[in-house]
Length: 621
Image 1 (spheres, rainbow, N blue to C red):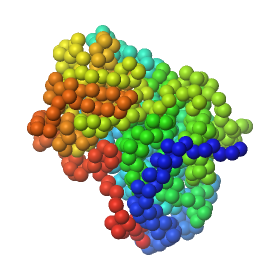
Image 2 (cartoon, rainbow, N blue to C red):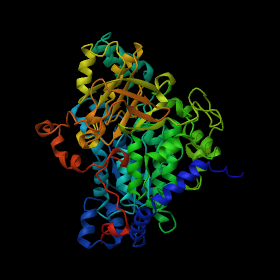
Image 3 (tube, rainbow, N blue to C red):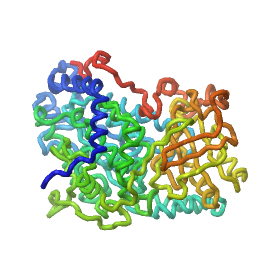
Image 4 (cartoon, one colour):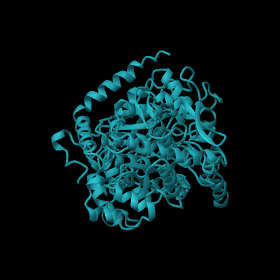
Protein backbone atom coordinates (compact mmCIF):
# COMPACT_ATOMS: atom_id res chain seq x y z
CA UNK A 1 0.00 0.00 0.00
CA UNK A 2 1.36 3.40 -1.01
CA UNK A 3 1.62 5.82 1.90
CA UNK A 4 -0.82 8.75 1.60
CA UNK A 5 0.66 12.10 0.66
CA UNK A 6 1.03 14.37 3.65
CA UNK A 7 -1.40 17.28 3.58
CA UNK A 8 0.51 20.38 2.43
CA UNK A 9 -0.58 22.47 5.43
CA UNK A 10 0.55 19.79 7.88
CA UNK A 11 3.82 19.53 5.96
CA UNK A 12 4.30 23.31 6.08
CA UNK A 13 3.46 23.60 9.79
CA UNK A 14 5.87 20.75 10.50
CA UNK A 15 8.63 22.48 8.57
CA UNK A 16 8.05 25.79 10.32
CA UNK A 17 7.88 24.22 13.74
CA UNK A 18 11.06 22.25 13.16
CA UNK A 19 12.94 25.34 11.96
CA UNK A 20 11.62 27.50 14.81
CA UNK A 21 12.59 24.89 17.38
CA UNK A 22 16.01 24.00 15.97
CA UNK A 23 18.11 25.57 18.72
CA UNK A 24 15.99 24.56 21.71
CA UNK A 25 15.27 21.07 20.40
CA UNK A 26 18.94 20.45 19.66
CA UNK A 27 19.86 21.60 23.15
CA UNK A 28 17.22 19.37 24.73
CA UNK A 29 18.27 16.30 22.74
CA UNK A 30 21.93 16.88 23.56
CA UNK A 31 21.05 16.78 27.22
CA UNK A 32 18.95 13.63 26.83
CA UNK A 33 21.54 11.82 24.73
CA UNK A 34 24.35 12.69 27.11
CA UNK A 35 22.36 11.08 29.92
CA UNK A 36 21.48 8.08 27.73
CA UNK A 37 25.11 7.46 26.80
CA UNK A 38 26.02 7.26 30.46
CA UNK A 39 23.51 4.44 30.88
CA UNK A 40 21.25 3.68 33.85
CA UNK A 41 22.38 5.72 36.84
CA UNK A 42 21.64 2.99 39.41
CA UNK A 43 24.91 1.26 38.60
CA UNK A 44 26.82 4.36 39.70
CA UNK A 45 25.17 4.73 43.10
CA UNK A 46 27.46 4.44 46.08
CA UNK A 47 26.75 1.56 48.43
CA UNK A 48 25.03 3.71 51.04
CA UNK A 49 22.81 5.30 48.38
CA UNK A 50 21.86 1.94 46.92
CA UNK A 51 21.20 0.39 50.33
CA UNK A 52 18.75 3.17 51.13
CA UNK A 53 17.03 2.46 47.81
CA UNK A 54 16.21 -1.16 48.57
CA UNK A 55 16.08 -1.15 52.38
CA UNK A 56 12.31 -1.74 52.48
CA UNK A 57 12.35 -4.47 49.83
CA UNK A 58 12.13 -8.10 50.82
CA UNK A 59 13.47 -11.46 49.74
CA UNK A 60 14.41 -11.98 46.09
CA UNK A 61 13.55 -8.37 45.18
CA UNK A 62 16.16 -7.02 47.59
CA UNK A 63 18.77 -9.46 46.28
CA UNK A 64 18.06 -8.52 42.65
CA UNK A 65 18.13 -4.79 43.37
CA UNK A 66 21.49 -5.22 45.08
CA UNK A 67 22.87 -7.15 42.11
CA UNK A 68 21.65 -4.53 39.66
CA UNK A 69 21.31 -6.98 36.79
CA UNK A 70 17.58 -6.57 36.13
CA UNK A 71 15.88 -3.36 34.98
CA UNK A 72 14.06 -1.55 37.75
CA UNK A 73 10.95 0.44 36.80
CA UNK A 74 9.60 3.45 38.68
CA UNK A 75 5.84 3.48 39.23
CA UNK A 76 4.67 7.09 39.54
CA UNK A 77 1.02 7.18 40.50
CA UNK A 78 -1.76 9.71 40.86
CA UNK A 79 -3.84 7.33 42.98
CA UNK A 80 -6.33 8.65 45.47
CA UNK A 81 -9.63 7.10 46.47
CA UNK A 82 -11.73 10.27 46.33
CA UNK A 83 -11.59 10.87 42.59
CA UNK A 84 -13.35 8.34 40.41
CA UNK A 85 -10.79 8.44 37.60
CA UNK A 86 -7.85 7.70 39.88
CA UNK A 87 -9.46 5.33 42.37
CA UNK A 88 -8.73 2.25 40.19
CA UNK A 89 -5.00 2.93 40.50
CA UNK A 90 -5.07 1.72 44.11
CA UNK A 91 -4.95 -1.86 42.79
CA UNK A 92 -2.33 -1.26 40.10
CA UNK A 93 1.06 -1.44 41.88
CA UNK A 94 0.90 -5.15 42.81
CA UNK A 95 -0.48 -6.02 39.37
CA UNK A 96 2.24 -4.02 37.64
CA UNK A 97 4.98 -5.42 39.88
CA UNK A 98 3.87 -8.98 39.14
CA UNK A 99 3.77 -8.30 35.39
CA UNK A 100 7.18 -6.63 35.49
CA UNK A 101 8.72 -9.57 37.36
CA UNK A 102 7.21 -12.01 34.85
CA UNK A 103 8.76 -9.92 32.05
CA UNK A 104 12.20 -10.07 33.67
CA UNK A 105 12.34 -6.82 35.61
CA UNK A 106 11.65 -5.22 38.97
CA UNK A 107 9.42 -2.31 39.96
CA UNK A 108 9.06 0.07 42.89
CA UNK A 109 6.48 2.74 43.60
CA UNK A 110 8.77 5.74 43.25
CA UNK A 111 6.32 8.39 44.29
CA UNK A 112 2.88 9.87 44.09
CA UNK A 113 1.67 13.05 42.43
CA UNK A 114 -1.31 15.16 43.48
CA UNK A 115 -4.51 14.72 41.52
CA UNK A 116 -7.11 17.40 42.05
CA UNK A 117 -10.46 17.50 40.28
CA UNK A 118 -11.83 20.55 38.53
CA UNK A 119 -15.28 19.01 38.94
CA UNK A 120 -15.01 19.11 42.75
CA UNK A 121 -13.36 22.55 42.93
CA UNK A 122 -15.56 24.20 40.27
CA UNK A 123 -16.45 27.72 41.42
CA UNK A 124 -14.48 27.25 44.65
CA UNK A 125 -11.26 28.85 45.88
CA UNK A 126 -9.43 25.57 45.35
CA UNK A 127 -9.89 25.95 41.59
CA UNK A 128 -7.27 28.70 41.72
CA UNK A 129 -4.67 25.99 42.37
CA UNK A 130 -5.82 23.73 39.55
CA UNK A 131 -3.67 24.91 36.66
CA UNK A 132 -0.67 25.36 38.94
CA UNK A 133 -1.07 21.72 39.99
CA UNK A 134 0.17 20.68 36.55
CA UNK A 135 3.60 22.13 37.22
CA UNK A 136 3.56 20.78 40.78
CA UNK A 137 2.86 17.34 39.29
CA UNK A 138 5.76 17.78 36.87
CA UNK A 139 8.05 18.62 39.79
CA UNK A 140 6.66 15.72 41.83
CA UNK A 141 7.38 13.38 38.93
CA UNK A 142 10.93 14.68 38.77
CA UNK A 143 11.34 14.14 42.50
CA UNK A 144 10.09 10.56 42.16
CA UNK A 145 12.59 9.82 39.38
CA UNK A 146 15.46 11.76 40.94
CA UNK A 147 16.69 8.87 43.10
CA UNK A 148 18.56 7.35 40.14
CA UNK A 149 17.22 3.92 41.08
CA UNK A 150 15.33 3.42 37.84
CA UNK A 151 15.85 2.22 34.29
CA UNK A 152 12.39 3.17 33.07
CA UNK A 153 9.01 4.42 34.24
CA UNK A 154 5.35 3.43 34.37
CA UNK A 155 3.21 6.55 34.78
CA UNK A 156 -0.32 6.33 36.12
CA UNK A 157 -2.59 9.30 35.45
CA UNK A 158 -5.83 10.22 33.73
CA UNK A 159 -7.35 13.64 34.34
CA UNK A 160 -6.98 17.32 33.60
CA UNK A 161 -3.54 18.51 34.77
CA UNK A 162 -2.23 15.11 35.83
CA UNK A 163 -1.28 13.63 32.45
CA UNK A 164 0.36 16.82 31.11
CA UNK A 165 2.23 17.20 34.40
CA UNK A 166 3.46 13.60 34.33
CA UNK A 167 4.65 14.03 30.75
CA UNK A 168 6.42 17.35 31.42
CA UNK A 169 8.14 15.79 34.43
CA UNK A 170 9.09 12.63 32.56
CA UNK A 171 10.54 14.67 29.70
CA UNK A 172 13.04 16.10 32.17
CA UNK A 173 14.22 12.47 32.41
CA UNK A 174 13.83 12.02 28.68
CA UNK A 175 16.61 9.42 28.50
CA UNK A 176 14.43 6.87 30.33
CA UNK A 177 11.89 4.65 28.55
CA UNK A 178 8.39 5.51 29.78
CA UNK A 179 4.94 4.00 29.31
CA UNK A 180 1.64 5.54 30.42
CA UNK A 181 -0.98 3.25 31.94
CA UNK A 182 -4.62 4.40 31.66
CA UNK A 183 -7.49 3.31 33.92
CA UNK A 184 -10.46 3.82 31.59
CA UNK A 185 -13.82 5.63 31.75
CA UNK A 186 -16.75 4.74 33.98
CA UNK A 187 -19.69 2.98 32.37
CA UNK A 188 -22.33 5.22 30.82
CA UNK A 189 -24.79 6.70 33.29
CA UNK A 190 -27.34 9.48 32.97
CA UNK A 191 -26.81 10.98 29.50
CA UNK A 192 -24.71 14.13 29.62
CA UNK A 193 -27.34 16.06 27.69
CA UNK A 194 -29.92 15.28 30.36
CA UNK A 195 -27.48 16.28 33.10
CA UNK A 196 -26.94 19.63 31.33
CA UNK A 197 -30.72 20.11 31.04
CA UNK A 198 -31.20 19.66 34.80
CA UNK A 199 -28.29 22.01 35.52
CA UNK A 200 -29.94 24.70 33.43
CA UNK A 201 -33.30 24.13 35.12
CA UNK A 202 -31.58 24.56 38.49
CA UNK A 203 -29.97 27.79 37.29
CA UNK A 204 -33.48 29.03 36.40
CA UNK A 205 -34.84 27.99 39.79
CA UNK A 206 -37.20 25.44 38.24
CA UNK A 207 -35.79 22.45 40.14
CA UNK A 208 -34.21 22.24 43.57
CA UNK A 209 -30.87 21.03 44.89
CA UNK A 210 -32.24 17.55 45.54
CA UNK A 211 -33.13 17.04 41.88
CA UNK A 212 -29.82 18.52 40.78
CA UNK A 213 -27.79 16.24 43.05
CA UNK A 214 -29.77 13.21 41.88
CA UNK A 215 -28.93 14.02 38.25
CA UNK A 216 -25.26 14.68 38.99
CA UNK A 217 -24.91 11.44 40.97
CA UNK A 218 -26.57 9.46 38.18
CA UNK A 219 -24.07 10.91 35.71
CA UNK A 220 -20.93 10.59 37.87
CA UNK A 221 -21.79 7.23 39.38
CA UNK A 222 -18.80 4.89 39.65
CA UNK A 223 -15.06 4.56 39.35
CA UNK A 224 -13.46 5.61 36.09
CA UNK A 225 -13.14 8.82 34.14
CA UNK A 226 -16.22 11.01 33.68
CA UNK A 227 -17.73 10.05 30.34
CA UNK A 228 -18.01 13.47 28.68
CA UNK A 229 -15.26 14.56 26.31
CA UNK A 230 -13.46 17.07 28.50
CA UNK A 231 -9.81 17.40 29.35
CA UNK A 232 -9.51 13.99 31.06
CA UNK A 233 -10.66 11.99 28.07
CA UNK A 234 -8.87 14.34 25.68
CA UNK A 235 -5.72 13.45 27.64
CA UNK A 236 -6.33 9.77 27.03
CA UNK A 237 -6.92 10.18 23.30
CA UNK A 238 -3.84 12.36 22.88
CA UNK A 239 -1.56 10.00 24.79
CA UNK A 240 -2.64 7.16 22.54
CA UNK A 241 -2.19 9.15 19.33
CA UNK A 242 1.24 10.21 20.62
CA UNK A 243 2.15 6.53 20.92
CA UNK A 244 2.58 6.57 24.71
CA UNK A 245 -0.38 4.30 25.51
CA UNK A 246 -0.86 0.81 24.12
CA UNK A 247 -3.04 0.84 20.99
CA UNK A 248 -6.74 0.80 21.83
CA UNK A 249 -6.19 0.95 25.58
CA UNK A 250 -7.51 4.39 26.51
CA UNK A 251 -11.26 3.80 26.72
CA UNK A 252 -11.55 0.26 28.11
CA UNK A 253 -13.65 0.41 31.29
CA UNK A 254 -12.30 -0.49 34.75
CA UNK A 255 -13.09 -4.05 35.89
CA UNK A 256 -13.18 -5.25 32.28
CA UNK A 257 -10.86 -8.29 31.97
CA UNK A 258 -9.35 -6.59 28.92
CA UNK A 259 -8.38 -3.65 31.14
CA UNK A 260 -6.34 -5.92 33.41
CA UNK A 261 -4.66 -7.60 30.43
CA UNK A 262 -3.70 -4.23 28.95
CA UNK A 263 -2.30 -3.04 32.28
CA UNK A 264 -0.10 -6.13 32.49
CA UNK A 265 1.01 -5.75 28.89
CA UNK A 266 1.96 -2.10 29.49
CA UNK A 267 4.30 -3.30 32.22
CA UNK A 268 5.82 -5.93 29.94
CA UNK A 269 6.32 -3.37 27.16
CA UNK A 270 8.11 -1.05 29.58
CA UNK A 271 10.46 -3.86 30.59
CA UNK A 272 11.21 -4.70 26.95
CA UNK A 273 12.01 -1.08 26.23
CA UNK A 274 14.51 -0.98 29.08
CA UNK A 275 16.06 -4.24 27.87
CA UNK A 276 16.45 -2.64 24.41
CA UNK A 277 17.87 0.55 25.93
CA UNK A 278 20.62 0.96 23.35
CA UNK A 279 18.34 0.30 20.37
CA UNK A 280 15.04 1.94 21.34
CA UNK A 281 14.46 5.69 21.08
CA UNK A 282 14.22 7.43 24.42
CA UNK A 283 11.08 9.25 25.55
CA UNK A 284 12.73 12.56 24.72
CA UNK A 285 13.53 11.37 21.21
CA UNK A 286 10.03 9.93 20.71
CA UNK A 287 8.20 13.13 21.59
CA UNK A 288 9.36 15.09 18.56
CA UNK A 289 7.76 17.73 16.32
CA UNK A 290 5.75 15.14 14.38
CA UNK A 291 4.35 13.56 17.51
CA UNK A 292 3.39 16.95 18.96
CA UNK A 293 1.59 17.90 15.75
CA UNK A 294 -0.16 14.53 15.64
CA UNK A 295 -1.55 15.40 19.07
CA UNK A 296 -2.71 18.80 17.77
CA UNK A 297 -4.47 17.21 14.81
CA UNK A 298 -6.18 14.61 16.98
CA UNK A 299 -7.34 17.32 19.38
CA UNK A 300 -8.88 19.31 16.54
CA UNK A 301 -10.42 16.36 14.73
CA UNK A 302 -12.10 15.08 17.87
CA UNK A 303 -13.28 18.46 19.20
CA UNK A 304 -11.14 18.04 22.30
CA UNK A 305 -10.54 20.22 25.31
CA UNK A 306 -9.39 23.81 24.92
CA UNK A 307 -7.22 23.24 28.00
CA UNK A 308 -4.83 21.53 25.62
CA UNK A 309 -4.11 24.80 23.88
CA UNK A 310 -2.22 25.40 27.13
CA UNK A 311 -1.00 21.90 27.87
CA UNK A 312 0.28 20.93 24.42
CA UNK A 313 2.30 24.15 24.25
CA UNK A 314 3.79 23.43 27.69
CA UNK A 315 4.49 19.77 26.87
CA UNK A 316 6.16 20.71 23.61
CA UNK A 317 8.36 23.28 25.32
CA UNK A 318 9.46 20.66 27.86
CA UNK A 319 10.89 18.78 24.87
CA UNK A 320 12.46 21.91 23.37
CA UNK A 321 9.68 22.34 20.77
CA UNK A 322 8.23 25.84 20.33
CA UNK A 323 4.62 25.11 19.44
CA UNK A 324 2.40 28.19 19.01
CA UNK A 325 -1.31 28.94 18.77
CA UNK A 326 -0.67 29.96 15.16
CA UNK A 327 0.32 26.35 14.44
CA UNK A 328 -2.98 25.19 15.94
CA UNK A 329 -4.93 27.82 14.01
CA UNK A 330 -3.35 26.83 10.69
CA UNK A 331 -4.07 23.16 11.33
CA UNK A 332 -7.62 23.90 12.47
CA UNK A 333 -8.36 25.44 9.08
CA UNK A 334 -7.77 22.10 7.32
CA UNK A 335 -8.39 19.40 9.93
CA UNK A 336 -12.03 18.27 9.74
CA UNK A 337 -14.19 17.69 12.82
CA UNK A 338 -14.85 13.94 12.91
CA UNK A 339 -16.40 13.28 16.32
CA UNK A 340 -19.54 14.36 18.14
CA UNK A 341 -19.04 13.56 21.81
CA UNK A 342 -20.64 15.59 24.60
CA UNK A 343 -20.49 18.59 24.91
CA UNK A 344 -20.15 18.55 21.10
CA UNK A 345 -22.95 16.00 20.69
CA UNK A 346 -25.17 13.58 22.58
CA UNK A 347 -22.74 10.63 22.76
CA UNK A 348 -20.25 9.90 25.51
CA UNK A 349 -16.76 8.40 25.21
CA UNK A 350 -18.09 4.87 25.57
CA UNK A 351 -20.26 5.43 22.50
CA UNK A 352 -17.28 6.95 20.71
CA UNK A 353 -15.15 3.90 21.57
CA UNK A 354 -17.87 1.51 20.39
CA UNK A 355 -18.27 3.40 17.12
CA UNK A 356 -14.64 2.76 16.22
CA UNK A 357 -12.91 5.08 18.64
CA UNK A 358 -9.31 6.15 18.43
CA UNK A 359 -8.35 3.35 16.03
CA UNK A 360 -10.79 4.52 13.39
CA UNK A 361 -9.91 8.18 14.00
CA UNK A 362 -6.21 7.43 13.45
CA UNK A 363 -6.97 5.35 10.35
CA UNK A 364 -9.05 7.99 8.58
CA UNK A 365 -6.66 10.83 9.48
CA UNK A 366 -3.67 8.80 8.26
CA UNK A 367 -5.46 7.98 5.03
CA UNK A 368 -6.22 11.68 4.54
CA UNK A 369 -2.57 12.62 5.03
CA UNK A 370 -3.41 14.51 8.22
CA UNK A 371 -1.20 12.55 10.62
CA UNK A 372 2.47 11.68 10.51
CA UNK A 373 2.78 7.91 10.23
CA UNK A 374 6.57 8.06 10.44
CA UNK A 375 6.87 8.30 14.24
CA UNK A 376 8.17 6.19 17.10
CA UNK A 377 5.75 4.62 19.59
CA UNK A 378 6.07 2.40 22.64
CA UNK A 379 5.17 -0.58 20.44
CA UNK A 380 7.57 0.23 17.63
CA UNK A 381 7.87 2.42 14.57
CA UNK A 382 4.83 3.71 12.77
CA UNK A 383 1.47 5.11 13.84
CA UNK A 384 -0.48 2.67 11.63
CA UNK A 385 -0.16 0.19 14.51
CA UNK A 386 -2.65 2.40 16.35
CA UNK A 387 -5.45 1.52 13.92
CA UNK A 388 -5.64 -1.88 15.61
CA UNK A 389 -7.80 -2.85 18.58
CA UNK A 390 -7.00 -5.17 21.51
CA UNK A 391 -9.07 -8.29 22.19
CA UNK A 392 -8.89 -11.31 24.49
CA UNK A 393 -8.96 -14.67 22.71
CA UNK A 394 -9.03 -17.62 25.10
CA UNK A 395 -7.73 -15.31 27.78
CA UNK A 396 -4.76 -14.14 25.71
CA UNK A 397 -4.29 -10.52 24.69
CA UNK A 398 -3.87 -9.87 21.00
CA UNK A 399 -4.56 -7.11 18.49
CA UNK A 400 -6.67 -7.24 15.34
CA UNK A 401 -7.46 -4.66 12.66
CA UNK A 402 -9.87 -2.04 13.97
CA UNK A 403 -13.02 -0.99 12.11
CA UNK A 404 -12.40 0.32 8.60
CA UNK A 405 -15.74 2.14 8.76
CA UNK A 406 -17.49 4.03 11.54
CA UNK A 407 -20.17 1.98 13.26
CA UNK A 408 -22.18 5.10 14.09
CA UNK A 409 -21.97 8.08 11.76
CA UNK A 410 -23.82 10.25 14.29
CA UNK A 411 -20.80 9.92 16.57
CA UNK A 412 -17.74 9.33 14.39
CA UNK A 413 -17.17 10.05 10.72
CA UNK A 414 -14.44 9.55 8.12
CA UNK A 415 -12.35 12.47 6.96
CA UNK A 416 -14.16 12.25 3.61
CA UNK A 417 -17.53 12.99 5.26
CA UNK A 418 -16.87 15.16 8.34
CA UNK A 419 -19.27 16.96 10.63
CA UNK A 420 -17.39 20.14 9.77
CA UNK A 421 -14.65 20.93 7.29
CA UNK A 422 -12.49 22.57 9.96
CA UNK A 423 -11.38 21.69 13.47
CA UNK A 424 -13.18 22.19 16.73
CA UNK A 425 -10.83 24.85 18.13
CA UNK A 426 -10.27 28.33 16.71
CA UNK A 427 -7.84 31.11 17.59
CA UNK A 428 -9.36 34.63 17.64
CA UNK A 429 -7.46 37.92 17.53
CA UNK A 430 -8.10 41.61 17.75
CA UNK A 431 -7.64 44.73 19.87
CA UNK A 432 -8.64 42.76 22.99
CA UNK A 433 -5.82 40.26 22.53
CA UNK A 434 -5.57 36.67 21.35
CA UNK A 435 -7.84 33.91 22.62
CA UNK A 436 -9.25 30.49 21.90
CA UNK A 437 -12.80 29.43 21.02
CA UNK A 438 -14.10 25.87 21.06
CA UNK A 439 -16.41 26.04 18.07
CA UNK A 440 -17.33 22.37 17.88
CA UNK A 441 -19.97 22.72 20.62
CA UNK A 442 -21.40 26.01 19.33
CA UNK A 443 -24.20 26.07 16.76
CA UNK A 444 -23.44 28.00 13.59
CA UNK A 445 -26.00 30.71 14.34
CA UNK A 446 -24.32 31.48 17.68
CA UNK A 447 -20.74 31.83 16.45
CA UNK A 448 -21.14 35.56 15.72
CA UNK A 449 -22.14 37.86 18.57
CA UNK A 450 -21.93 41.64 18.59
CA UNK A 451 -23.26 43.16 21.80
CA UNK A 452 -22.48 45.58 24.63
CA UNK A 453 -20.00 44.45 27.25
CA UNK A 454 -20.95 43.66 30.82
CA UNK A 455 -17.72 43.64 32.80
CA UNK A 456 -17.06 41.54 35.90
CA UNK A 457 -13.84 41.05 37.86
CA UNK A 458 -15.13 37.88 39.52
CA UNK A 459 -17.33 35.04 38.26
CA UNK A 460 -19.47 35.24 41.41
CA UNK A 461 -20.41 38.82 40.56
CA UNK A 462 -21.70 37.64 37.20
CA UNK A 463 -23.77 34.90 38.85
CA UNK A 464 -25.21 37.42 41.32
CA UNK A 465 -26.18 39.73 38.45
CA UNK A 466 -27.85 36.80 36.70
CA UNK A 467 -29.73 35.77 39.83
CA UNK A 468 -30.92 39.37 40.38
CA UNK A 469 -32.31 39.56 36.84
CA UNK A 470 -29.86 42.26 35.77
CA UNK A 471 -29.00 40.35 32.60
CA UNK A 472 -32.55 39.50 31.54
CA UNK A 473 -33.75 40.57 28.11
CA UNK A 474 -30.50 42.09 26.87
CA UNK A 475 -27.82 41.02 24.45
CA UNK A 476 -24.40 41.03 26.08
CA UNK A 477 -20.81 39.94 25.96
CA UNK A 478 -19.80 38.99 29.49
CA UNK A 479 -16.22 40.09 30.11
CA UNK A 480 -14.85 38.08 33.03
CA UNK A 481 -11.38 39.48 33.60
CA UNK A 482 -8.51 39.18 36.10
CA UNK A 483 -8.81 35.41 35.75
CA UNK A 484 -5.48 34.76 34.00
CA UNK A 485 -2.58 32.65 35.25
CA UNK A 486 -0.76 35.57 36.90
CA UNK A 487 -3.95 37.01 38.42
CA UNK A 488 -5.34 34.03 40.29
CA UNK A 489 -4.11 30.84 38.66
CA UNK A 490 -6.54 30.89 35.71
CA UNK A 491 -9.46 29.04 37.33
CA UNK A 492 -11.96 27.21 35.19
CA UNK A 493 -15.21 29.17 34.82
CA UNK A 494 -17.46 26.32 33.76
CA UNK A 495 -19.92 27.25 36.53
CA UNK A 496 -21.00 30.15 34.29
CA UNK A 497 -22.17 27.84 31.51
CA UNK A 498 -25.70 27.03 32.80
CA UNK A 499 -26.54 30.70 33.40
CA UNK A 500 -25.24 31.75 30.00
CA UNK A 501 -27.17 28.87 28.43
CA UNK A 502 -30.39 30.12 30.04
CA UNK A 503 -29.90 33.57 28.54
CA UNK A 504 -29.14 32.11 25.12
CA UNK A 505 -32.21 29.89 25.21
CA UNK A 506 -34.35 32.93 25.94
CA UNK A 507 -33.30 34.34 22.60
CA UNK A 508 -30.66 36.73 23.86
CA UNK A 509 -27.36 37.09 21.98
CA UNK A 510 -24.69 36.18 24.52
CA UNK A 511 -20.98 35.41 24.55
CA UNK A 512 -18.17 35.38 27.08
CA UNK A 513 -14.69 36.88 26.78
CA UNK A 514 -12.21 36.02 29.51
CA UNK A 515 -8.56 35.60 30.33
CA UNK A 516 -9.64 32.56 32.37
CA UNK A 517 -10.45 29.00 31.34
CA UNK A 518 -13.69 27.25 30.39
CA UNK A 519 -12.18 23.79 29.73
CA UNK A 520 -13.21 20.85 27.58
CA UNK A 521 -16.66 21.07 29.12
CA UNK A 522 -17.27 24.40 27.37
CA UNK A 523 -20.84 24.38 26.19
CA UNK A 524 -23.09 25.90 23.57
CA UNK A 525 -22.34 29.57 24.32
CA UNK A 526 -19.47 31.11 22.30
CA UNK A 527 -16.53 31.71 24.63
CA UNK A 528 -13.28 33.47 23.81
CA UNK A 529 -11.06 32.14 26.55
CA UNK A 530 -7.38 32.24 27.56
CA UNK A 531 -7.28 35.82 26.24
CA UNK A 532 -3.72 37.08 26.39
CA UNK A 533 -2.16 39.42 27.42
CA UNK A 534 -4.21 39.02 30.59
CA UNK A 535 -5.78 41.91 32.44
CA UNK A 536 -3.55 41.56 35.49
CA UNK A 537 -0.48 42.19 33.34
CA UNK A 538 -1.90 45.26 31.63
CA UNK A 539 -3.86 43.50 28.87
CA UNK A 540 -6.63 45.37 27.04
CA UNK A 541 -9.40 43.60 28.99
CA UNK A 542 -8.41 45.78 31.97
CA UNK A 543 -9.63 48.84 30.04
CA UNK A 544 -13.00 47.53 28.84
CA UNK A 545 -16.07 49.23 30.33
CA UNK A 546 -19.74 48.35 30.51
CA UNK A 547 -21.44 49.26 27.23
CA UNK A 548 -18.39 48.92 24.95
CA UNK A 549 -19.51 47.12 21.81
CA UNK A 550 -17.61 43.83 21.48
CA UNK A 551 -17.82 41.62 18.40
CA UNK A 552 -16.77 37.98 18.60
CA UNK A 553 -16.70 36.20 15.24
CA UNK A 554 -15.51 32.66 15.87
CA UNK A 555 -15.55 31.66 12.21
CA UNK A 556 -13.59 34.71 11.06
CA UNK A 557 -11.23 34.46 14.03
CA UNK A 558 -11.74 38.04 15.22
CA UNK A 559 -12.30 39.65 18.62
CA UNK A 560 -13.00 43.37 18.24
CA UNK A 561 -14.05 46.21 20.55
CA UNK A 562 -15.62 49.39 19.18
CA UNK A 563 -13.80 51.69 21.58
CA UNK A 564 -10.50 53.50 21.76
CA UNK A 565 -8.69 51.79 24.62
CA UNK A 566 -5.33 53.45 24.05
CA UNK A 567 -6.00 56.46 26.28
CA UNK A 568 -7.99 54.72 28.99
CA UNK A 569 -6.69 53.79 32.39
CA UNK A 570 -7.20 50.22 33.60
CA UNK A 571 -10.06 49.62 36.01
CA UNK A 572 -10.51 46.83 38.51
CA UNK A 573 -7.64 44.73 39.74
CA UNK A 574 -6.46 41.22 40.40
CA UNK A 575 -6.90 39.80 43.90
CA UNK A 576 -4.15 40.74 46.33
CA UNK A 577 -3.15 40.81 49.99
CA UNK A 578 -5.38 38.96 52.39
CA UNK A 579 -7.52 37.70 49.52
CA UNK A 580 -5.10 34.80 49.19
CA UNK A 581 -5.46 33.59 52.77
CA UNK A 582 -6.92 30.09 52.99
CA UNK A 583 -7.26 27.01 50.81
CA UNK A 584 -3.50 26.95 50.35
CA UNK A 585 -3.54 29.82 47.87
CA UNK A 586 -1.02 31.84 49.86
CA UNK A 587 1.55 29.11 49.19
CA UNK A 588 1.50 29.81 45.46
CA UNK A 589 2.64 33.43 45.45
CA UNK A 590 5.85 32.43 43.66
CA UNK A 591 3.81 30.78 40.91
CA UNK A 592 1.65 33.86 40.40
CA UNK A 593 4.79 36.00 40.20
CA UNK A 594 6.60 33.86 37.62
CA UNK A 595 3.97 32.07 35.52
CA UNK A 596 4.15 32.63 31.77
CA UNK A 597 1.34 33.76 29.47
CA UNK A 598 -1.39 31.44 28.23
CA UNK A 599 -0.06 31.24 24.68
CA UNK A 600 3.27 29.98 26.05
CA UNK A 601 1.60 27.26 28.09
CA UNK A 602 0.87 29.21 31.31
CA UNK A 603 3.86 27.47 32.88
CA UNK A 604 6.42 28.43 35.49
CA UNK A 605 9.08 26.52 33.55
CA UNK A 606 11.12 28.59 31.07
CA UNK A 607 12.45 27.15 27.84
CA UNK A 608 16.21 27.68 27.43
CA UNK A 609 16.84 29.55 24.21
CA UNK A 610 20.23 28.03 23.43
CA UNK A 611 22.31 25.07 24.43
CA UNK A 612 24.59 27.43 26.37
CA UNK A 613 21.75 28.35 28.73
CA UNK A 614 21.00 24.79 29.73
CA UNK A 615 21.47 23.73 33.30
CA UNK A 616 23.82 20.92 34.27
CA UNK A 617 23.01 17.45 32.90
CA UNK A 618 19.87 16.07 34.44
CA UNK A 619 21.44 12.82 35.70
CA UNK A 620 24.00 13.25 38.42
CA UNK A 621 26.22 10.42 39.54
